[in-house]
Image 1 (cartoon, helix red, strand yellow):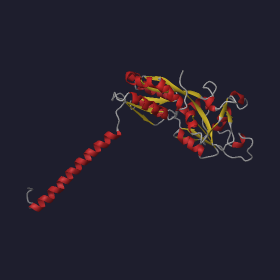
Image 2 (cartoon, one colour):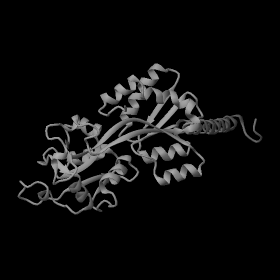
Image 3 (cartoon, rainbow, N blue to C red):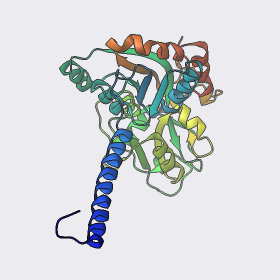
Length: 309
């Protein structure tokens, strides 16, 4: 019994002390549980887990691959997270994930970071895609030349009457783009903008879904996303035919729908990749092989991408 306390006071003090100790134990256990639930093992830590992050253009395709692979390999878990190409490659180099999905090559800065970290990356082409230029379904425009597209994103063409002759009223073009870390944006910059930059009025969106939402919600909008994503949103946006030059629209077949154009004839086609650390090849190769298998190629085709030869 505590010195100087009667029995009633002793019980009161004891209960208070027990309650305090219980609370401390609960807080300690709860905090430990939270820490474990929000952290994940780094690349290579768990031999039965593969973490994939990267291109939002490829996210749904990679999820389909992951589900098919896990069905045939029940002992291995493949976790797919959303992001963009730049984030995926950075996290791969830093050891936070196992595989980065990418809709472009490595940048000079990414190559430099890999060199600084003494990491060697293996790149595998797994599919091909096109970039679709989209407008609101109410827009009367059906085709655009790549030269005019560049002028719109540079800010040299600001109103729709310059593009659609039937329009009698000058209305502003609301231009949507992607953030710099996006592989889709990088490809667009390289093949459309070349040495030019986006006009400050171009509204940069965090994802392709956000671009589609912006174009769907504004009849004056134009944007660009992966072809597979645009085709899935055919009830919300219209895909424009592309001509190499406004003066020569016959460069794109008039009697072919966008979906029927081959990668060789469609101006904005691009390869899609998976990157992983070379020293992790033995652990990752089985998943990579699945993406290039008959089932993996079927998923590529079914989801609106083009299989590799």
